Length: 133
Image 1 (spheres, rainbow, N blue to C red):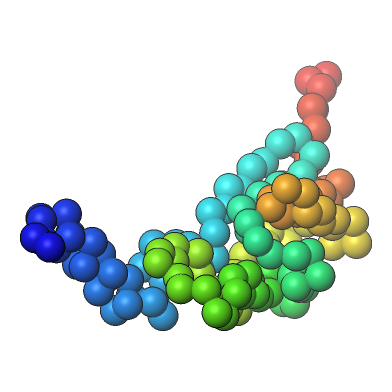
Image 2 (cartoon, one colour):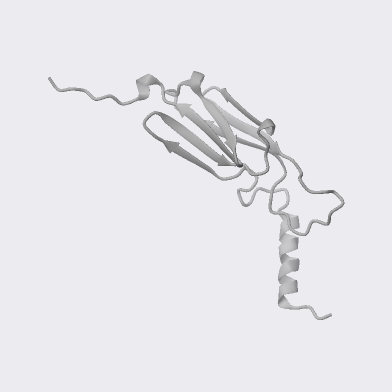
């Protein structure tokens, strides 16, 4: 059987995947995160496909929000894996919080592979209109 340039490219791709298997070179280890601010709160939205909410831990210490967890293996060990683009293993991400976040009313929800954490602003951090007399 004659090899083509596509066979060589596939071999190169497989070799690169093997080399970078344990390195977070693509951001896939953690997932993509967006942080939003609105009038009443800050919102952190992270894509964590394939991670069960029971495998995610969220904690706050010293004004740092820590999200950690583990994406577990999802394929059969007997299957021959041809392409692996989803990181498996432990992950951790830290966010330094503004001290004006209401720590007692933070809530988190996981839906369709998206983790959404709402961090309400404390009353003193919200803007208020000052009337001129």
